Image (cartoon, one colour):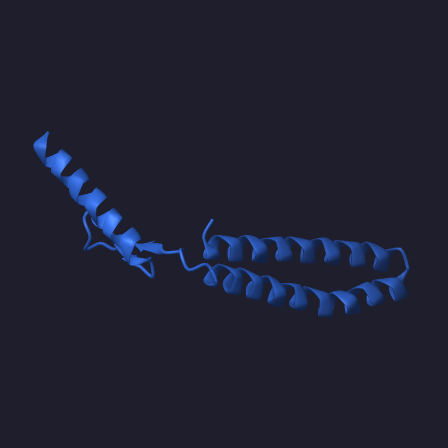
Length: 110
């Protein structure tokens, strides 16, 4: 799972939990428990942004601390076997480039 996948998953879960919170407070409002509904709403106004901030920091700081992590950039100018690797260690890039050359060679031989 990439950083962006984790970030989108976390954001989606927070939106889902916000929906649940709105449903609960609406049910409490209709059953004449407005005090409790307002209390839950006030807490959630602080909790959800804090959870989002903590999750975002955890995702991006934790993943950025991994020195072996690299990611693949693919664009229209690269062929199906050509890929450029960014922020990967040199040994990993050399190994990947060698494997790509070998794969291209094997495809051209057939």
